[in-house]
Length: 138
Image 1 (spheres, rainbow, N blue to C red):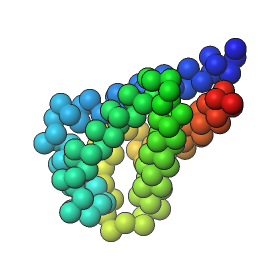
Image 2: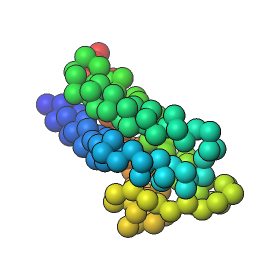
Image 3: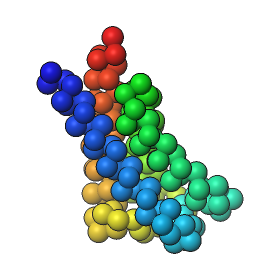
Image 4: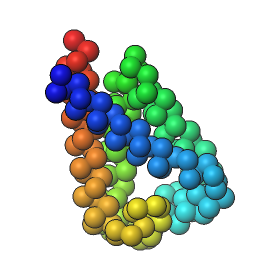
């Protein structure tokens, strides 16, 4: 019972996170594209990411909502969080040729160190979600 409640809570957190992340991007794709251009990523990937990133986030929401696909959605949440955490770590440790601003939502007010800590916490939370969903599926 407790594991089920915890699993639903973690799932809800990620549904909220991906909703918070994806819907503003769709509302203003031009602004999102400009933010991507300021990031430490190759310019050729900006256009595909402008559409693929919010679509992926919405796809994850749909997977998390559906109990039959929830585990896959949580694996994708873990993967996305790992990618974002590695990217932010690269910014913090100046692995890239420029130091972009944290230009999105809550993260624009917290700086890269806090952003990194939040990403680590969310990555661990996604891992816990995967483990719990794996347990509940057996």
